[in-house]
Image 1 (cartoon, one colour):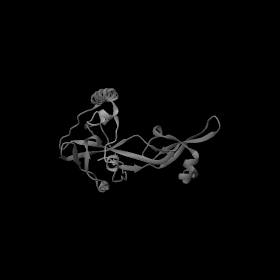
Image 2 (tube, one colour; image 1 turned 90 degrees about the vertical axis):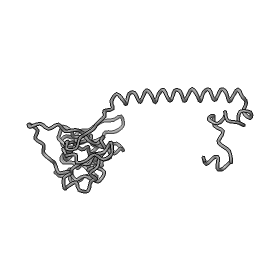
Image 3 (cartoon, helix red, strand yellow; image 1 turned 45 degrees about the vertical axis):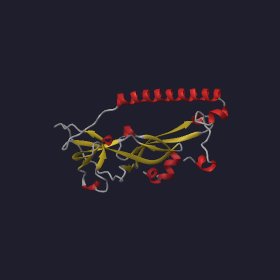
Image 4 (cartoon, helix red, strand yellow; image 1 turned 180 degrees about the vertical axis):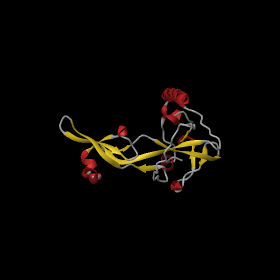
Length: 207
């Protein structure tokens, strides 16, 4: 039961319970009928909104399935651990692999043949974390060694500073630096506040 009911011995008199036996006489038939109609209308509108959002999601949803022996890419989450304007930043999701599918576990999970340096990671993954790899003779794939955590995340470290600039706001000026991160190209460099980068990575400014 709800805490209110346990404390007072009766249900909380919200509009959801006003049409129950005993409440109608105490509150008045007109008020109860009006409130019940409003609650019914709200439920219908919520159901219509849920159905509309479901139709939007279904248009973009793809039913993925793989066969044993297929090769797939595995999605990982590179985390920089940098506070950018008071928020923790995160780079775009990346994929590593490809890895061979060894077995199908249930209906939506697959077991992958991971390399030895990923032995600490559980080798069963949901289908949403996989992307199919279509082999081609001209493809040259270089496997980059990445130290992943058990939750498939790894920390990015800054490699070098590419640019500096001062961003002027209404009442202050903020020094910014454009940083290239490890396992990233110059095209994927991000702008960070220089004081934060200097406090977290002082060695970066000595390069």
